[in-house]
Amino acid sequence: MAEKKDYNPGNPDEGAGVAMLERMNHAHQYLRELAFPLIPWREGMRILDVGCGGGETIHQMLGKSEGSVIDGVDYAKTSLKISSKVNAHELGKRVFLHRADVAKLPFDDDVFDLVTAMETTYFWPDILAAFSEIRRVLKKGGLFAIILEAVTPGIHDDWSIPGVDIRIRSADEIRELLVKAGFSSVSVHRGEEDSAVILAIEAEE
Figure 1 (cartoon, rainbow, N blue to C red):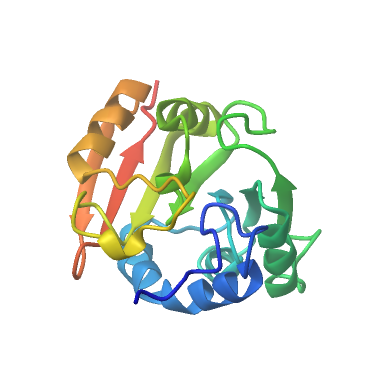
Figure 2 (figure 1 turned 60 degrees about the vertical axis):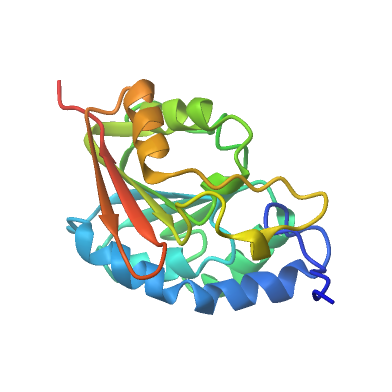
């Protein structure tokens, strides 16, 4: 008999969310190691991590850009609680966390140099609206990095959780949606197993 999964990765407020977030903070390390070398880090970046989860990605990005300011967005209260704990040393200084919907971000236009999305796009009900909103808050020439451990639909049956809507899209489908949302350049970088980093650039005017 398959083990019952007492958590909802799309909404950690339900079930054993705290344990799941703490586990994912460690389990996603290989994805950060795939993605971070592809990002052109520099000092003083404005960064947004959408679907910030347990906060470990924010924690590690602080060391990649000296003097950076990082906003994290998640709609799950439990995610924000754990992320606040992980980043307590910089909370309110270089790290600012917000409860919000990725399709309705609480930021002005042209704010961020970099937006990251770690293992979160599977749960977005309107992914095209979310991509358009992320493009809105990116500066011209800014980078959007989508980091995923699954980009092949139909081979991840073990991900299925009753009552949880998880949609795995192919890298090609994500690329097409990013282009439709208005990004000028999209590249796909494959990692081990089924992982991928998809980079999209907001065009310079």
